[in-house]
Image (cartoon, rainbow, N blue to C red; front, side, top):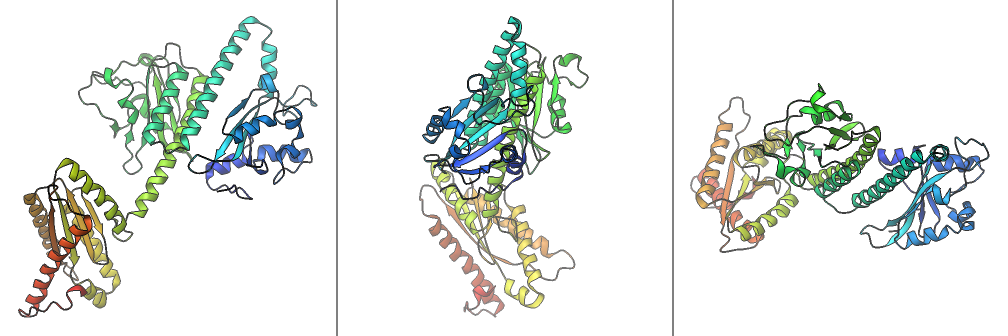
Length: 503
């Protein structure tokens, strides 16, 4: 896939990047033709009388080639990431500084040039250049270098900035990879601990359906030293300092927790906490996660807080991306009318369960259900009542079976359930419970119709494996034998089964 002639931004994060005045972004294709530039770049170049879109990068900014910095773009197109520091390069593109001491002086810039990959990560299809104006900071640093003490502080600051940039680059690369949310959370925490010199911490996300805090990183950091009787990676209530981070949607810094009125006593057996720094991970003003560290030797500073906020922003993007992917998948495997799985979702998940059953040697039960008389309900009472009957049946199925079982509507009036880790006796009990719940619903007052279901059951024995299609065909035959008996009884004992499928 090549870069489009016009680079289109779709979500709020991308729109923010397009309109921000905090830093510059330039995107080129593999021929180094400019395909996108954000407001930071276009505002400055327009004032200089330059129009840059759809033109050669080196034509618009000849100083890149004149200063022999075009080699960095060739290296980026070969897959390398290049960082340009103002200390050595002064600037990448010649622009006047926003706040110079001399109005004619050029901007000091910090820049990075990244390769852009085709989906799959094998072919480079362009470059992304990041530029920020650090003129004000550089000029201040030049004045501060007059003393040895300030020089040492500057070296430490630059060294840390180097580590931060390297950490951010690694996180950014991981963010666009197929890495799991757990892997990204652990990498975020690893960088947070390293850069704040903290021995323990955690990174987690808010589970969107129930609002619980999930902390996958607790399994790797400090968990072995925790002597609490009940340890969990899922928290339903938000307490203590970390709870305030989520509730107040803002960073919490406590360098002496025992003297901090916001600190609540840790549970018995919990790792002792004497210093704490936590920041929320937010998207569009909503907290969807948290990153926290504790027990650094030196007090946490404002710089530590800003660093953690940068890490939490990347963590928020990772959480948001995985939540969107999960939401899209859920839509693709769910039945819009009833809210249970659809045919595609059933077959996808059922195939997986058969493989698990074969490995674990534990049986499965397939229950095939046909909702009797749906056509009659639709014809006499309208399709709204027919839809309601389908929803009622789906609700009964959800009450009858476990959350771990696969419950699906696989056709107009057909449902299927795959119950895992059951015996034949348990299968019969589940069907009895289902029949009882249907009868119970029918006994309620004011009903316009009665629910009736023909049910076919088949037990899957891992010792005698078969394909899912074979299993469904067997359950289908059992179900239609029951349906024929119902119709035969209604017609005074006739054995004819005509119309059996009309319900």
